[in-house]
Length: 555
Image (tube, rainbow, N blue to C red):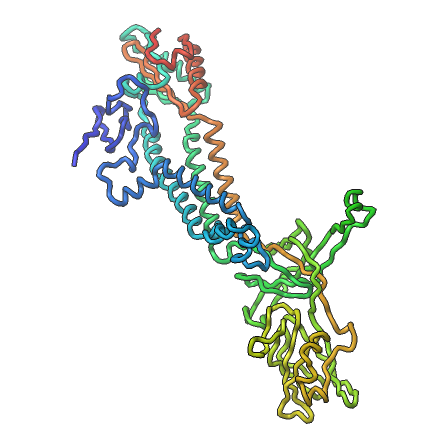
């Protein structure tokens, strides 16, 4: 292992890999002759420049590389573009993505689905890319901000002549007779006064001077990094259960549905739609005979589950009520429901049949059957009906056994056990609310003797409730959004700091009547040259800004 001596002639011990002495600024390596100095981080060594790195240092070096960070950003951008080629799965309502992409987009759609691009932004590899970008930002910042802070915090007023003469903006000239210490110090004080008027913070040491302004702008890129890190952490926090949701759900009129992964239930109490009248529409629409909705809204009620959550009979507490319209969502503590669309889908909600004696015509009583959540038992006069099975979409399997084709009440069927006078042991009874299903499946014949005695039917349409519309709502929960906006604001502050201000520094020393001046800025060299030339003019030295950049200018 090679031992490198990094102790400067001024006595300061520098870290291995340091290019310029942290104290006096003397170049520790003279390989570049009189070329301008590399002033990045003022020549201070970074951890990624260590010799004989360990495995931890190699990981550090990998993520501290700006080139690696750019590659990660480009890969993430490419993945984001691919994720927007076709709609993502979370934008579907009641669609099977395994068949949707192939049927809609053909072979390319099928490949898109098989590659997992249909859920790009929820995939583990996309989140891993965001995590790696965040890690790179943290390590890049630490690898540079700590040496920069150390360099700016230990600035010496009297810099080494080699440091000053190899700045990009320099000046060498005679200003006083050798040995006239008083005149030299007076000129330095005059120059200090001029620079203070230009908002520089000036420090003097006899015939040496250091002036700087807008040092805070050097921290702009790192504040920008902090904002981006907060932004990425907030984006990753969306994967925490309950922190983010963006899905579409259909609510039938009168239907209460549980919102997945939340303690909330939402009910579509009533849906209304208002259409434009022909006289309210333009000629173009009237000629095409279009029906255009003017306004549609969902009278929504939001419930919070207090007990028995996830069961068929939860205990619900109303927490919010709001008419949801387009761009006017229901908003309850960050839970938002937006009106997305609607469809006219007449659907049976409930029926209220009456139980009567077929032979005598006596009506024993009525029961209300909810198609979405029927009760376990009903009482109609002296008879009790125990619900044994419910089939929302009745059908027969290949063995002739009853089954349901779907969970939607398209052809509902109920199987009860009736107990009462003459039926103490209980008798099975099959009931179809729709007349077409009664005839199709021969309800009376299946019920046999019980069907000959008792009849369960709806006398009029008043006992039938039908939902005309299904309201489609976009359910959103985004607890990370405030942090995303905060990160974006912090990042913008860093960008403004870095773009609109420049860290400018001027060093000078007078030895034996000869002035040696050096100046540096992180950008806008033309402005710095002009400002230094103007300050010199106020101090009695005329200098052309263009000649200052060349160095070696002697007056």
